[in-house]
Length: 171
Image 1 (cartoon, rainbow, N blue to C red):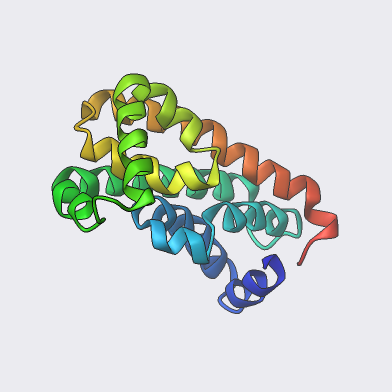
Image 2 (image 1 turned 45 degrees about the horizontal axis):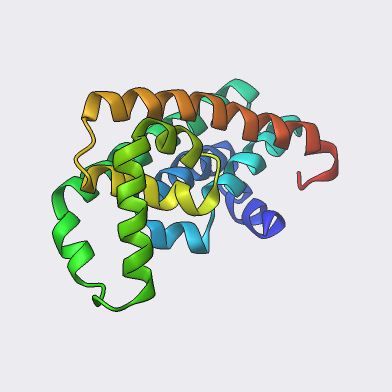
């Protein structure tokens, strides 16, 4: 997966790398379907690897990944806030997924801030929590605070993991 992604983004130089590091985490959080196809975390780890190889600077990877995570979470929240009813109504009442989504919504209502922070580190939650937080009408100020905190820890962690793995990765 990383080799395929590296080949594609390196064709566009540092602009391609930084675009992937920004957009893939953003799209993953804003549109959960994208996260299933191209996980944002892979792009951020790749950004760290390519920083080790000198394709981009570590600072650029850190800032771009953090911005992508925050922007994606904000977009996911806005989507959930605006279209929460149509999103939830499309799932049949007896479907197991509806039961899980309703459980997740109740969990976010009870433990919202913790779900936002931890959700950034868990693949499935990273794609669902922003939209569900908007759907539950979590206060925007509290949501953004925990989004910033989670993104400020997650992005550097992933970039630095990639940087440490850099010698073994694509470049």
